[in-house]
Image 1 (cartoon, rainbow, N blue to C red):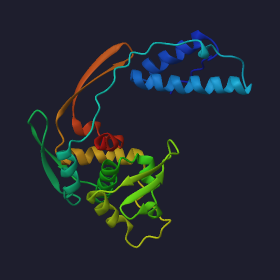
Image 2: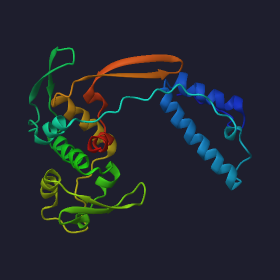
Image 3: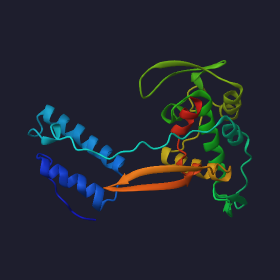
Image 4: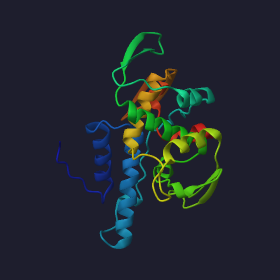
Length: 240
């Protein structure tokens, strides 16, 4: 809510901006580092184009206290449990346990979206596709027992073998579609991440995971259930 102005052309202004992200916005250190990296890239680009004078951002290299977070992926058993899990209807209460053993109930919402998310995630886990490539996959990319695609991130053309699980998912989503239609329903990455956490929760992926990060100069340790850390990219890690 503050209207704060910073000069990005001297070290003092850049420091003030970083402190604003840390203290006023309460961002984690890795998020601050990401925003600063974006700013640095943009200003260097603007200087090269002659849109502004040279900025100290090209010389100033602040130190960030970044600790790599645990790499989250599903085990083979967890992946198959998710793949075969029969998602309850809306309104059904699922009995669950925390990683500490306490019982609680979770009411299912958006069962249809959970089913679609489950298929999208499992397909990525069985084929190594990134979310971006899965989202734009068309029926024409399917050639008998393989996929032939050009990846969005690297523009690399790949031929990927399809196992029986991937074929079963494709059969559910390609019936009656033309060659140029997209295979999977349109679910945004943020929504898919949200649904994935709910899927992991009702599937009981509650193993305790320790996460350590910095918020400003404060070191924060958290122990959270595994399902809270699920995201679309976990599918690619699961494949690996």
